[in-house]
Length: 326
Image 1 (cartoon, rainbow, N blue to C red):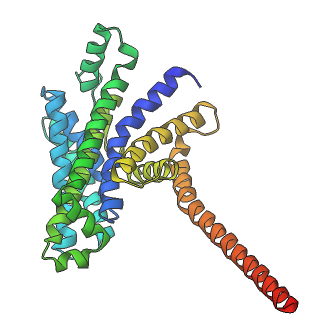
Image 2: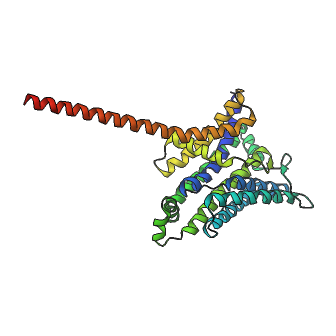
Image 3: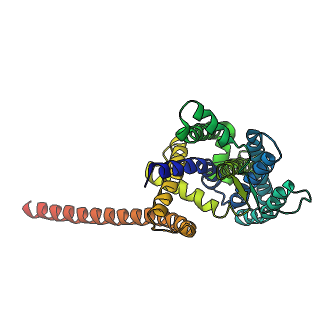
């Protein structure tokens, strides 16, 4: 595998890491299985692409995508908390609604405003063209995007760490751990869930906006399976780096996203997989990451019980010999 391929995989991984941080907030912190992710990821790409094509700054377009994702997540939270719809179903409903909404958003680039499945950005200025130009001017063109995305992703990581340690962040964490208990302290759990889902999908949409600019197109199908990619990043990161503290866990999520992309790239470059197998491999990785730790823990518990049983027999035998001597 060549250095440029590893560099490209690392760039994609660090962009997806922002999305994985969003999934971490909903899946781990709030304990909410939010499938809105597959739709809000595309929403971010669609909003950014439409604004860029219409002449807006790519930075402003990316921030608008973040806001759009926040509102999408809040609506999911409202469906669950106020509409009393199951968390999984509320996410599915919002994901379905966003599919049509995203088509309409991308249709804003056409005069008649009809639905449009994709928007090319080949001839448009994006964040990455501007970043590339800047780093080329200082002689770091090959590593410019990676350096830029490391800085941006670390900003999101540290903001997440800081927020989850604030009073509101601690309340959101407590809501995910035990909603009934935190409600007994007169906390507005509905508002906390809505806010948490809003922040989660804001991260996801921002990542979608960056991916659209990185790939130089936005497509209505680009979000398929994003929730699984996010979960794979979280599980891989936690399995390798642990999750003792919030700061360590968020860092693990970031590295998990990078490792996941590098693994996929290696498999594709070695001819082991076709591009069409990527989603299957992602599903297999998540299954293994979920099942193997449980099997390992079960085997450890079995070995521990066998060891205690053996020690018990040894102690009983020693006590019996002692009584015989006496």
